[in-house]
Image 1 (cartoon, rainbow, N blue to C red):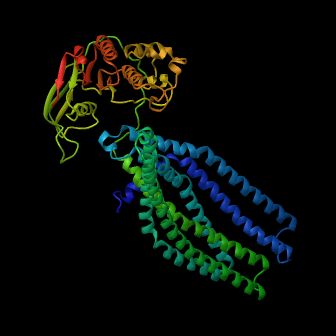
Image 2: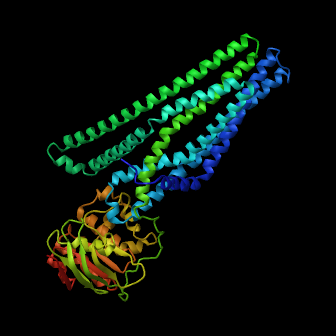
Image 3: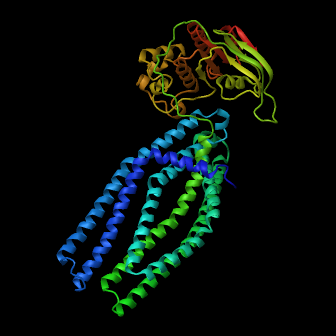
Amino acid sequence: MKSKYTTKQISRLIWQELKANKLQATNNTVAGLLIVGLEFLFVWLTKQTIDIATGSSNIFSFRTAIILIVCTLLAQLLLGAYRSWVNAMLSVKASNKMQMDIFSQSLTAPWRKLMEFHSGDIINRIEKDVNVIVSLVTDTLPSFIIVCAQFIGAFIFLYLMDQTLALFVVIIIPFFLLIGKLYIKTMRRISRQVRKTDSLLQAQYQEGITNRVVIKTIPGGTREIKHRVAATQQKLVDLVHLRARYSVTSNLVMNLGFSTAYLFTFIWGTYHLAQGLITYGALIAFVQLVAQIQRPARSLVKFIPDIINTLTSSERILEIKTSGGSPAEPATGKAPDLKPQAANISISFRNVTFSYRPDGRKILDHFSYDFPAGSRTAIMGPTGQGKTTLIRLILGLIEPTEGTVEISNKRPTSFAYVPQGNTLFSGTIRDNLLLANPQATDTQLKEALRMAKADFVSRFKDGLSSQCGEHGVELSEGQAQRLCIARALLVDAPVLLLDEATSALDADTEATVLHNICTTLTHRTIICVTHREKALEYCPRVLRLS
């Protein structure tokens, strides 16, 4: 499968992340280059020490040579520790920053675009693909620069000592590197399949845990879900094994080349030593320098899978970044206003046509309707006739195929919205309510709870600090729904949208909630999707879809 993103787009993404993490990248590069310099100094000192001990050199005393070697080793250890310490301090921040960026864009992307991705797949990209890219810019690229410097430095060092040996070592290595490059295209294709399968597996885990109650109630449900997960796991194992076979074959070819070069160096060096053409210290230096050349060459080969993984991860991250999302806007900090004010927001549908698929059924067909400012409107009708679609159009989650949805206020308008079902988050009741407005006081929270007939919270042992659990698992459906309504009332918005928000309430409780909302929030435009005729007592305007 050919990538839909160009090399330029991928390079721009990597460059942006490199600039964002330049401190860590620079630290890794500079510290690594200093360590390489110390390694070459150690090779030279080793040669001189052996030559001094064997009487072939008297550049300085044996004692001085030993002291210099010890100091060089200590300097390498200290630089390595410093590099590791700085990386530990910065690596988490680097990952968190990019993960927050992708997370924010996932939250703000157009609803229909976002629905193309499974939530488990998005989480997989945020957790794993982001780490692959951050690792490249903070570790792999600096390491690439370092090994290139190490390779060039070792070659120059060896060339100054023996030109023929140096040329042989560097000529034989590119030959094997070219052979290794032949598998890159296949490895990239396999890498895409591995990442896609890994995302599918995470999605299956997530759905299984989320719907575990439903699975338990279906005869054989647990067995079937486990069978599907096992099949995906086996597919992932097969792909990883296939990738490993290609990698092992490539490494075998590389190691054959490196072993040949090392063997030639050993034979060359011992022959010249036997002929008295070089010193024993020079032989040791030859062996060390060949290792200095081969080590970065091996590292360069290992960079190929890293680069392939980064290309794949960059494509997956770009799919999120190009979905239309943007960093989340900061909270205004404005306190919620539950007092009557003048209504100033009206909503008008003008000849709106909409279908979820280009060739699908038209949910709305040349539909026109006005929701006047300050009005209370109940939307009723059979399932599938477009009630929730109207709400999504108002919220801007979807756009009309034809026609327009007009809002009277030209300034950006926020909405207070209660969707169908239970939308509570894990944490305390206070945490859930403050999500709507972090600046709200406990007095305002309690007033919102009263209006939503959720003042049962006061009877809990921990009150507002009581835990909800995931999806409000500690509460009944009716209690969770009323808390969701209370949260929406804390949003300082001119329009309140209730999409079957009272479906889990009994008729009397629903009547009390609607009465409280409609008599208190006279300044808001209220639109209520419902199946109950009782709601019409509080919503004088009725839109019936059929």
